[in-house]
Image: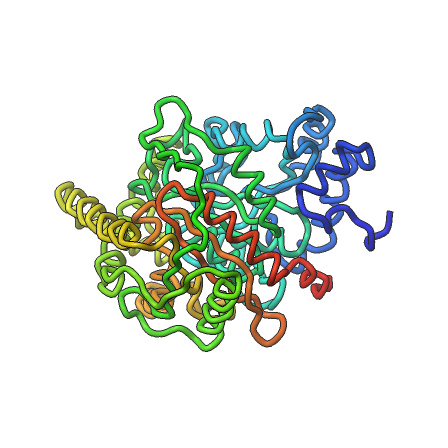
Length: 476
């Protein structure tokens, strides 16, 4: 089989169909994926742990009736844990201890039950805390479209692996944009599900004050939809439930469009503004009602202030959790400068301060929900404020650099993070490409529980502004 007809160039849905039809076996797919990693990963630094022999053994035992039987995928090395396997979460502290996950996460088990074969784990920022993938532990992951630039983060390793067609699906999670931002900068589909749609158990309840959502980055809308079907649904004891929709998708959709940046943290670059304009025009041409409008609360900095402090507190919690699990203290010098700043700031907060933040976030959620209830089905915005940054711009290598880096990340972070605070589903789509080959995603945000609307309109947009052919421009 030549590289010109390699099944890995197909999406996961098509790969699974080849397995069902007997055209290719799960082990053959896994070997093809491992060969792609051998060939392409040295230039990208996306995959940081291999599972070659375990993957082959799991491929041999895969259930052929599973919806994605035999399809190779990667796991982000953060939160979605495989019991008894290494888990470092971008931390030198954990790598020095050769830390292993205490148990399988429900999501990891559901990936396997859906037929996926996990071939490796991917790079991430330390504790998922930054919108870039440049941990001091493993070094920077390269954007396949722009080597030397970030694929964004913190799921940048998975995004680079999927865009470069090492695999068709890369696990990702999102506490402030970490599914959507890498999707936007790597030309992928990235859906952040509603709070409670995909379980975080059994090891977590409502991680990071309920801001974390789990799923993946893919190259097609149908893969994202099929994956959501395969892994979503409550687990016994989950702290949140998703309200079922009535199943009716309005036609035409009422869509607010906004080319601003929440909180007034700067302005969109011309490339980011164009991504919104292209998407708005396509939606209008599809017959939807597109109006300049957005929730007024997003003009204020309330959401950013709340989320920033919750991230600090959550980072401190994560460090303390690992200290308890390992029994080994984490010294300040074992943390990256930005993580160290988060932890120090968190330790100045009281328990009452944290409850005040959670309450303020819930009030933001109510005001955003009122805007949707007032007549809108979706909000269209940019996913990121600028094209991919060169390596080093979004990583602090010293305490003195922390302030300037935080200022630099705020425009893009504010575009995505408010939907983590409100728990709404949001999807980034690669509808615009600057300078011919630089992906610039735009995102659509729906009311809580309405992934059905997002996936329906995403499929429409994929039909009129297709992007899969663009991956042929990547050369390795």
